[in-house]
Image 1: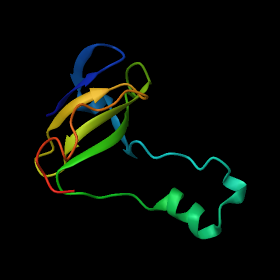
Image 2: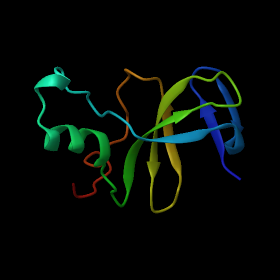
Image 3: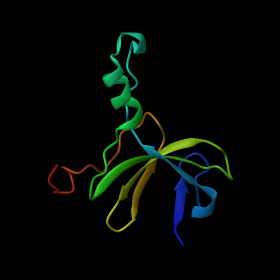
Length: 100
């Protein structure tokens, strides 16, 4: 069983309290009405699926109900860090020596 640190509660809790909500750091188009159907479709449906480090959006559903980001290794499932939305991650693919 995984234990995940909630950056809002400041506690290490069971993975059963959390839900992954997809890729993190996806900027919303500034003017959605000016997007083409293809651009809007790319924003809504297409996500990265890398091998290695990946930044994900999570929610502490059975706890404080706050969203936060996590950096997870998709090969080992290890969560390297959790951080509040708006903060920068400490771990990136380039910093870990992996090819981007």
